[in-house]
Image (cartoon, rainbow, N blue to C red; front, side):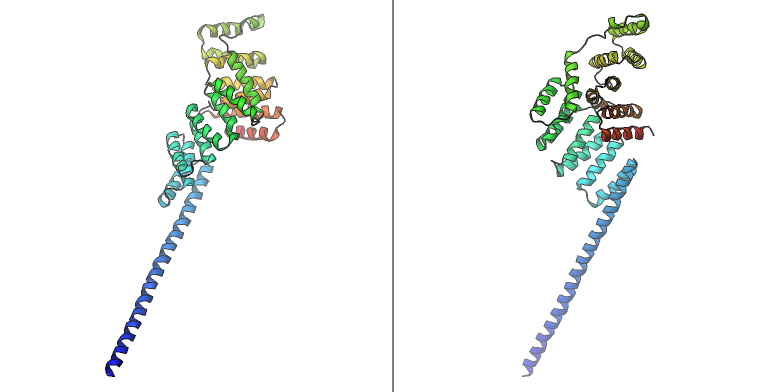
Length: 328
């Protein structure tokens, strides 16, 4: 009887100890879980703070500061697509295009069909005048959505792949995907395919234009770019816009990557009320502008004039604002 009593006490003791031990273990697990959850929540708040600070700094073009905040984000989450994208944008703002490309590629590893990321990669290549690689990426965009076909025409024109541009125009028109820009691209292409070896001198040999005729003869002999600039400036200052259209277009045969020639051609087309053609030329030429805010603003002002001429007030205002921003 006594033994049974002692055995019962022993069992009761073990049960009590087990319950206490289990309760302590459960408390430990709960405490660890709460600590882990609290740490995760804390990291999430820190991430958001750093990320929004990066966005703020980028908005005021303080790209180095933005990158510092993004590095803090990376320490918390090193595989975040948005962080990689923001890194790319800020390095682009610093004109560090190799770094911009590395980070946009990192973002694309996570989201290979993200059209915003792909469009930005095209922009990086265009800024480096690497139109060949930009074309490859643009073709990927078209597979995702055919509406990006028109941009491929522009890239073909900028890369002087005129036959491919012509084929693409036909394809876009068949699918009815084009806008008013297509009209301008077609006329631009027509002029490019005709080509020119010399500037027309004969029409200028009058008493009032002896200097201009002399300049054109000089250019035809040596193809000197500075002489060409003098010719075009003279024509613009003297309102010889028909000549300016022809001579700037012919000049592009010799210097296809000189943005000034595109600007002068667009200006002349605007003066002649050929607004669709002007938009095409200016859109092609602006991507050749590198680190020149004044010239870039000139392009935007001409684009504003083109859209105003077409009675597209929203687009006109957009380009007026861009020009004003650059001239501050």
